[in-house]
Image (cartoon, rainbow, N blue to C red; front, side, top):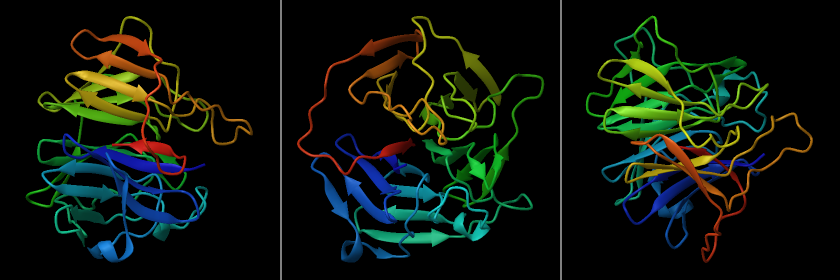
Length: 278
């Protein structure tokens, strides 16, 4: 399996970090693919990893978590990095910090989680720590450097623990789609509102996309675009890749799924990989 983390940058580009192919650790930026590694970047450069969470905010590329080993079944805790890495995309300089939370501990290192920005807050949901699937929602305040474990309102349903799902933010809400628990893939769509701290499962009209994990998403003008992924588990000897030429989207205001099957042409792309979206 080949996995990478992807996040949107400015209105003109997006960033791809790392993938599971002999420990690659480069950073690529579009629209004209550019690999930034080695002498082009300085500072505390993150080690090679896969299934990490990344996000972009105000010229900063933020990376947290991921698996730094070569085997997803590893029980070695030190292969799960829990430091926060921040790349200044103008200066090309990495910094890292071991943020301390007002809680007894910061979130444990993990892989397969999602990450996105809600305002100035770096938001992480789900993932896997060793053999434990997680359903926690953590928020890192980029100004104070403190982690906050968000506790949803009791008495309301919430998404099952998972990894390989996608997450995007709009205003003070995040949207979670898909993922897997290792036994089955999901196609459920959830919304979390930070004002009332409540999860809500959405039931879009038009039919949901097939279950999947390891897919990519993007949010543009209130429309959620879903691309690629897998519909089988990691133990399937013949996993099925969802067509990369089929783009499905959800108009958030109308909660109605539609589908487009038009090929998208680009001059060149990095080596094939699954994506762990932001």
